[in-house]
Length: 408
Image (tube, rainbow, N blue to C red):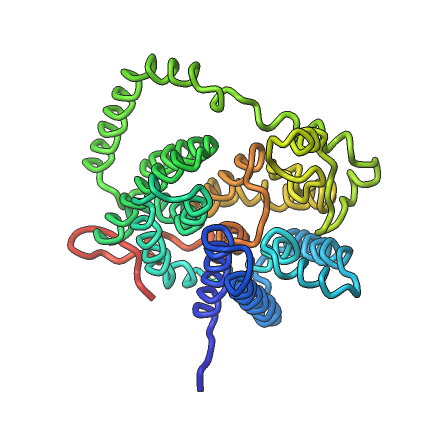
C-alpha cells in the first residue's frame, strides 16, 4: 500500500507549489493549463493542511512562547482567509484557486516540517535537482518572455538554503550551487529585479561570515575564499565609474517604484483597518494606476489586490495584528538561529529568515510558494531546542578528508 511519510509529503507540498507558479506565471493563466495549475496548488495546500494536524498531534516541538505565538498567528491567518469566504462559487474558486489569496496565508503551517532535522538532510538532493533544472532553463533567458523568466526564477528558490550551506555539500552538489548562483544573476538581470542584488550580497556576506565560525573547515580554504572575494571586489571597484554612469543614463534604475505604495495604502485604509486589515480578498485604490489606465499607459488595475512591499501587503490583508505576530515570531528566531545554535543548518535557517525580513521592506510579499514554505520550515527548525543543540558532528560525515552532510 502506498504510504506518504513526512519527507514525501514535504516534496509533494513543494512540487505542487512550484508547478502551480511555473504554469501560471510562465505558460498560461487560462484554459486547461489554469485548471492544471489550480489542481497542483490545492494538492499542495491540502497535503500541507493534513500533515500540519498530523504532525502537531504528535508534538509541537518548542517552548510556551512560540506555541502561543504560532497559535495566535495561525488562528489569525485562518480568520483572514475566512473573512473572504462567501456562498458565491466564483469567490470560493478565486480564494483557493490563486497563489496570491487564500493559501498564501496558510504557508505558516509548514512550521511542523522544520521540527525534524532529517527533512533538510533528506531533501537537499531534491533542492539541488530542482535548481539544476531551473538553471538550465535560465540560460535561455535572453530569448524568453518576461513572464517565463519570472517563472524560471521560482525554480531557483532553493539557492539561499544551498548557498548558505555550500561548504558541507558534495562536490557534485557544490557545482550545481555555483551554476545556480550564476543562473540566478542571469534571470535577475533579464527580469529587471534590482532587489535581488541585495539578496545576493546578503547571501554571500553571511556565507563568508559563517565560514569563519565553522571549525570543520580548514584555514587554507578560509584564506582562499577571502582572496577570491577580495579579487572580485577589486574587479567590481575598477568598474564603479562605468556602473555609476550606466545608472545615471538608465531612467528605470533611477525610478522610485516604492514610495507611492506607502502613500496610497495609508491614504486608503481606515484606522480600524490598520489593525485588522481587509481580509484575504482585500484591495486598495491606487490613484497612480487609475491615471495610467485612464490614459492608456498600461499597468495594474486601480483596485489592487497586492502591495509589492511585503510589510504593507500584511497590513492590507491582516492589519497590524498580522505584521506584529510575524515580527514577534521571526525576530527572536533570527537571534536564536544565528547566535544560539550549534550547527550549520539552524544557523542557515536564521540567516534565511533575516534575509526575508530585509526583503519584505522593498518587495517579496507573501504568496503560496516554495520560498515561503521554506521560510516557515526554517522557523520550525530554529524554534526546536533539540535542533539548535545538535552539533555539526551530529549531521556531518567525513568522506575523502572533507566533511559533508550525512544522507539519511
